[in-house]
Image 1 (cartoon, rainbow, N blue to C red):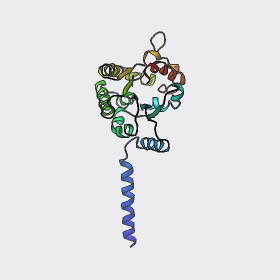
Image 2: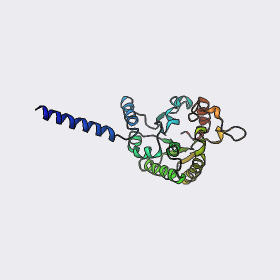
Image 3: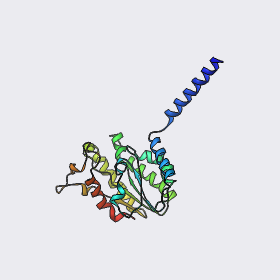
Image 4: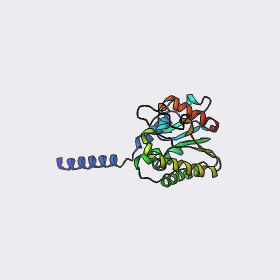
Length: 219
């Protein structure tokens, strides 16, 4: 009997370990979103923010846009591949009037040799998923920012921005929100004082500058 119990215990332990290993990256972030939605049902006709840590760390985003109902579903470190993978979880629970995406920077950070066209196609795939569920709402993409710590990746990022801007210009109810110039100084160089110590994430002033550019696009 002890042998049978030991075998069953071993099988259970292996199954548990295997199931934990199978959980994809950012699985817990998605579960946290689901818990938030259960505790406070998401309001309809909101502005839904989707993307990576530049949104995740903008925890007081609603204070920057008084009068706007904003749902922030950014999860740090995410790539466009992750938005595509979790698209059902990120889109299905909500009925927004507008979706704003900031993502793509980490795609390049994960692979320094990644071509801009690959990231552009990843965004187009996610855009298509949005349109399948929300054919007529406003969809905006915030340009990939110039992060001093990722200076070596800027050529690919800049090219991706250009191609995504061109794509969005042809789409109905869609805009490309370019935050590049507002983060530069009078000489056209990135203002490093807009970043915290890691030279990747932004200070409140950086977010204030984003707000000044985003405001005309906010529904």
